[in-house]
Amino acid sequence: MKILLDECLPRKLKYELPDHDVLTVSEMGWAGAKNGELLRLAETAFDVFITADQNMTYQQNLRSTTLGIIVIVAANNRFETLRLLMPNVVQALSAIQPGDLLRIPV
Image (cartoon, rainbow, N blue to C red; front, top):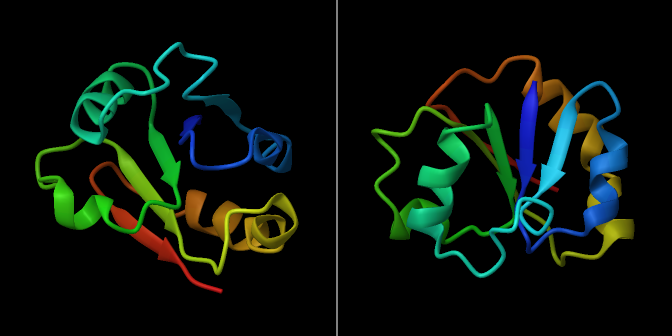
């Protein structure tokens, strides 16, 4: 599965998903792209977008997206905090479908 990690997440998280093809927004050269534009770009090359931006669901019309979107809900974006949630992300990846929006809470 091809996964795009949002730039608000630590890059090291990609190594917590070894069974997937994971790239970051920065690696794609899309740093600074606004959410709507970023989602359109991501749809062309990825299956799933992982973010911690909880406002994305309110700021974007996600009904027409073909991406699966996972929103990690945590107290902060530090690697040590988010790493603990990665088993839940891996489980979500096994069930996510195009257009799904899944939240991974603490």
